[in-house]
Image (cartoon, rainbow, N blue to C red; front, side, top):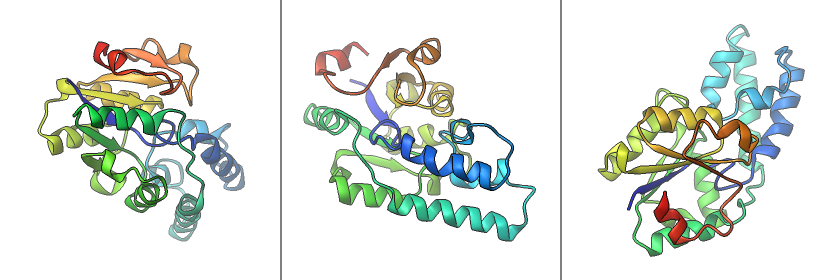
Length: 209
């Protein structure tokens, strides 16, 4: 019975389209010169975005971008992904260990736990505040496995972004891809199986993974 580790945005909550609005506008406003900037940065922590894409800016401008993004995250809606909370409850009812592994910060996750009442559904939480190397590095998933005292081979990862999929794969874990952010055909050669969301995912289906 594998341990189940979940990304947050695009997996537990359907927030990627909401992020796209902010980051595509910011990409244009701050003259990144990158088309569809929101797509390029998916799965990346906010500090890593600043370092990788805004390192040529002044410290004042970097701080402004960081604060704008953090404020947006603090107030953005967090609609659940169809079937996600029900699936989490199913796993907990069956005694499966679960973990949340996200590039978001602790404040956002705490708000989600309050608003969605899902805090008790996770046995460990790894946020951007706990790691020094974000996705696609495997550090976050390896930390979750360590928290739960299981091996990477005992972990099943649910991810939607390419960075997250690489993170779980490089950690030595089996990855189930959600086609909520990227088309299914772009994920198929990178994951064990692709699903559209968690609707109609049964305990029997979970056991086959």
